[in-house]
Length: 231
Image 1: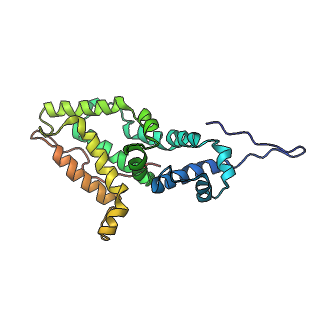
Image 2: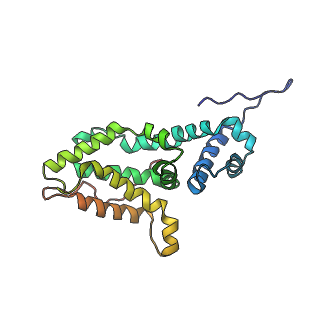
Image 3: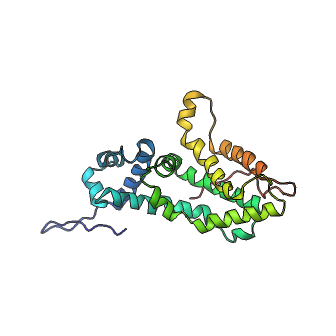
C-alpha cells in the first residue's frame, strides 16, 4: 500500500510521519482484534495501543476496510504462503509432508501468538469479518496437492486406511490452532496446563502422525524434532 503524502505548511519542510507507526498500528490491531473481536475494537483503542492518536490511524488507513485489507495482505497472507511454500510437495512422502506443514504452522503461530484467536474469531466463526478476504488468499491449489499426496500415500498402504485424506489438513490446522486460541479458557479450568511450543509440537506429532501411519508407513524424517522459528 503506498504511503500517504504528508501535508506541508508554507515555509516549512514537509515532514513524513514515522513509517514504523504504520507497522505498529497493524500489530496493535491484530492483538486487539484477536482479544476483543473486530466489531468491538475502536480506532481510538488501536491508536492508544500503538501509542499514536486516532487521527494518525486515519492518516494511514482512511477506512476500517483499508485497515483490514492491509492486515490481511501484510500480516496474514505472507504467513499462509510460508506454510505452503515448499518445493515439490507432490514428490514428498505423505508423513514427511504432514510433518513439514505441522512445523510451519507452529512456526507462524510462534511468530504471531494472536493468530490462533484471530483465526477462530474472525475467519472460522460465521460472520467473521476477515473470512472472505482470508479465504481468497489461502493457496487452495497447494491444499489440494496436499490432499492428493495423502490419498496417494494411503493407496500405497503408507497411511491408515480409515483416515479421510481430504480432512487431514483440516485436522492438522485444528490441532495447532484450537489449543492456542482457547488456552486462556482452559487455564482457568486447569492452571497447571502446559501449552508451550515444545509441548504442543510433541502432542500434535504424536496424536496426528501416529494416527496417520499405515502398516507400510515409515516415520517421517525428523518426526518429533523441535521446530525453530523463522526470522
